[in-house]
Length: 92
Image (cartoon, rainbow, N blue to C red; front, side, top):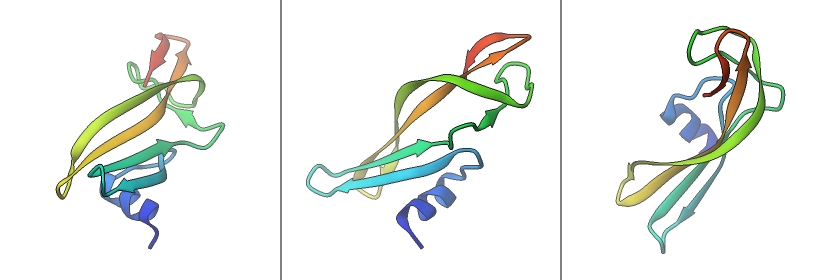
């Protein structure tokens, strides 16, 4: 099993979200996990739930996660913004 597959399962990610890469730096005691989604993925509006919305741009975000043993863990992703006909532009 690849490290990306392991973290995909451990984080409970569902399509279209996927673990793109993992970097571990034992000197810095840090684990970085990059999340992404395939180009053309469809999302639901976070406000009304309308399905089938395409991302029209993204915003880079990083979150501190629980420690991976004694190492700091961070999740990073380009978070999509969708255009909902009812709610307007919404960041997921």
